[in-house]
Length: 279
Image 1 (cartoon, rainbow, N blue to C red):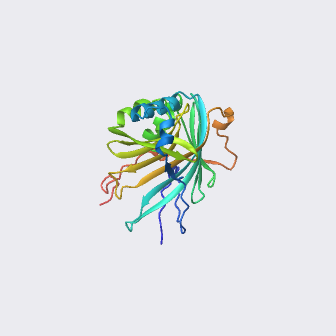
Image 2 (image 1 turned 90 degrees about the vertical axis):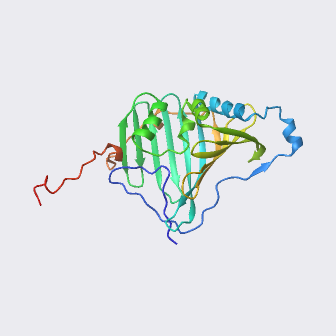
Image 3 (image 1 turned 60 degrees about the vertical axis):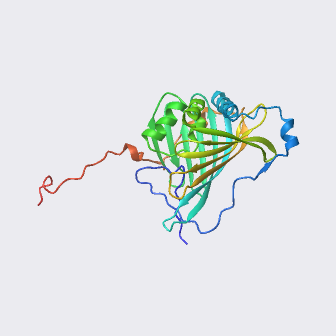
């Protein structure tokens, strides 16, 4: 059976067409969440208020001066046959506010992509094809992420978690929010929250304790055909990573080819036969 993979961080670059076929089932990347017994839940002296927990997580991430994390994610892709097929990817993220961002991605088919930002330049690089695109965008991570998504039309899953406007964005978009209960994910106690926006239903598991970091996120695109899901599992959180400015600066080799972002290519209007001098 032929399946179509739509990569989450595919570089939408001129001249780079990236497609893949997957012929085997993929192992699930999301750890099982186990309900905590009532006695254990009562021993954690934290309020089970969904909004307080969500905002505490958002503010903690927004104020973190730097961090690194690994995200294993799965996402559904609706096939032409009507069947929903799940694919996966792994990302290593380094944030060094206000100007350093690096996202290394490897998809389930082996494709690799890199996104870098050094405070002045956004770079996307496809090492498998040795092609890259760059655009100047001073102003910091917040401005770069916004430009990357809206102006360049690129896709960066869970990009909202990278910006300092995270608390405002969550509060603005969330229409309803419920506290589901306490669970254990990979040995860590977490608060399970369920929220709804206009287009997405989401679940987030927030670590209990002094560091309210997201441990798992599930997004359900309720208005999309087949209601596909995106699932992300967070691991190896490090709030004091050793960072080097060189990690955020791209240095091409002599063999690397620079190409344009698709959004940078001028749109050419079709020429009528009359304008072309024909019939």
